[in-house]
Amino acid sequence: MNRLILVGAVGLAISAGAILWQSRGAPAPSTDLPFGAVNAQEAADVDTSSIVEMTMGPEDAKVTVVEYASFTCPHCARFHLDQGKKLKADYVDTDLVRFIYRDVFFDRPGLWASMVARCGGEEKFFGISDMIYSQQSEWTADRDDPVQMANSLRKIGKVAGLSDEQLEVCLNDNDKAKTLVAWYQKNAEADNIRSTPSLIINGTQYENMSYDELKVIIDEKLAE
Image (cartoon, rainbow, N blue to C red):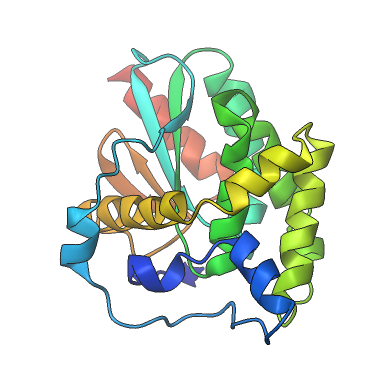
């Protein structure tokens, strides 16, 4: 289970486009944390109303499941490919559960992945997320080469139907990157998120669990 580290919005939010540009004339900066102390006031001052909540399932579902996860978290990838798919098939696709996905950013590549996943809007988000999680071990294989990681994410976006132009705009949007990080900080602090994946089910927080355990909780809440 990955432990959450809160980071300053300005320190983390360097776009993949900026990494590629810088790499032509200078060594690429590290992709790893830390980037300095949390600046809570800075995050609080950022207008995050432009960030779209990525959801599946009806708004009036009796049960709402919020997942906090990072695209670079191996535990999150395993949850997404196992429990997450079963949850979608059994409860979301049958309109019993509303599912909300919220980003956690441990590092810059996780932020870049989110920017690629969001590049196609709400319609493509979960499909691109599936590809990013399914190929996590491949695109994160060389953490010492941020250019390669960014290019691998671009390839995933192109397979999903995004154009080179769309990806350039998305990955060079540093204002959007900073806003995403501030949005993540606000959410994580409000819900006291300290590890990933974390789930909030009808307002109650849970850590990672098996699908059988998750199913029991959801069934109990549906029966209330």
